[in-house]
Figure 1: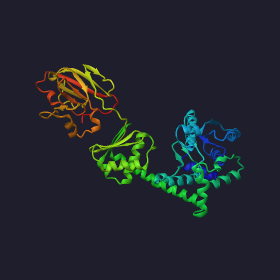
Figure 2: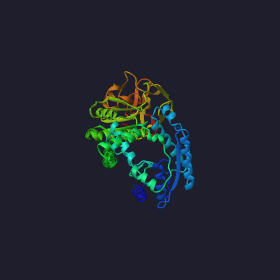
Figure 3: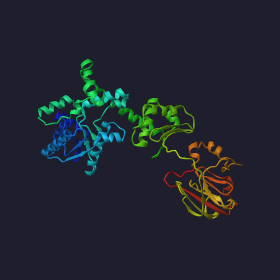
Figure 4: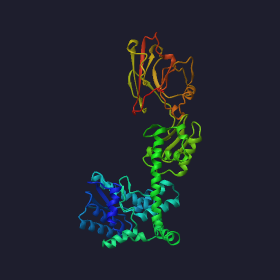
Length: 468
């Protein structure tokens, strides 16, 4: 078995030379077998082993004895030992999660804190083939797809599972053959958690009545599912890269036509991928949310919005599908006076620089999108920046007469949600510039212009300052 595990480590590149490997050791057979198997691997790969133990605070003196046992074994083996004590149940109750999930969060948090002090590395855990079978059965009962049927992987980020393809029967034989001392966690023999019930009751029942090789059968299912899942992941990312129009920290914009050409299964995967890109994780969303977004994107008309967990909303514009972080804000009107020089309107995400220039100083062919020129003598009174008001009218450059600002936005297919945030440069009578879109025809520079007002617009978040 030692050679089998060493081959797994090398084939999957789980451990490299000079790696720091934190080994989660409870003292039970699985983790003790892992520890000794890694000691064997250490003869072939130059890496550091750090023994880590978490006392979950639920078994009193037994848990304390387990901690002392692991500490003693680490000392006998000449390995660094690090431990912590936590209150798993209190943490779970406080954060409204199961005690199992609380224990997992606390364990991995402790392991990662150790790695930080060692400038990074890997976390080795003793998940095995039986654990994989339990995981798949639990996911099947809750409802899952190809990704869920993939189960645990040999490597997930900084977590490695060197004995994932080893059965518990093989582990017990290895422990006995090598006379490795272990401790027994009695709670593992009690059907008090869902996983324990699957291990102690469901799997033996399936073995006795349906398939004596259910552990190996489910292992094969996980491996074929991983192969299919990996193909779908790569295919989804390729299609995503083809239809994504823009990608920021708070918003992703997809091409509507490109999205609608895709098969439903890929559409749903792209939505999951987009949510993961936006939030860094996918928790909090269920199949019903993904299906609802896919339906919205396939069928809804412009302006339709769907609110999701985690302050996420999906919406449809004229030719785009948008997934974004959204915090509801009141549509507050704003207005700020502009003076010559630099202006940084309070609370707004942009600045304006204004100055008077001679007509000879500019080129009317200047195409810089964030700098505009106006006939200064046509400006009426003081300048201000504000957002739109009911009844606003605008005379777009190149057009005779004026039109409602609302109609101007509709003609340019400006999303309804953005219209109240677009800055307008105004004098005391008219809108002279719908920033990012068009200047006023009434204030354009002509051959008769003598003095020119230059206004430069800059976003403060580094986004593009382009005219649309």
